[in-house]
Length: 116
Image (tube, rainbow, N blue to C red; front, side, top):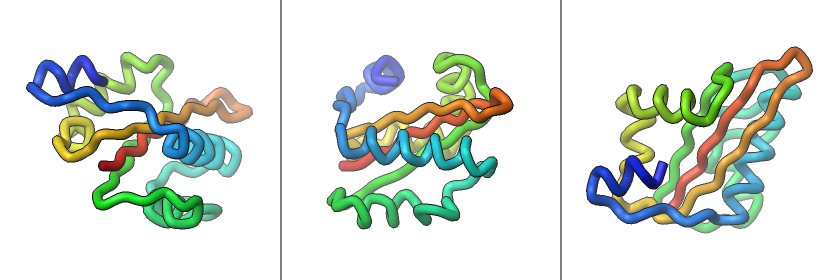
């Protein structure tokens, strides 16, 4: 992802351990509860999760994906989707957390959470 940002004249995102924890929880929640949505029945929205877990931000966002087998295929999909691409290339984001989980039936779930 930072390769895409650099190609567009943006600074790299740094890994944030709090966001990584939340992104992983969200991916595991989708896999366990067999849903695919920005709103979790367990945690609410990404913004709700950040508030609950004490993550402060001025701007934040989330990308989710389902079913891709590799990180490369997920990134290709996100970069070819205007909304997901906008999150990845948003200039005021400086931090990222990434989560991945696989359900019992083998379905994969991917989450990126961003903040300033």
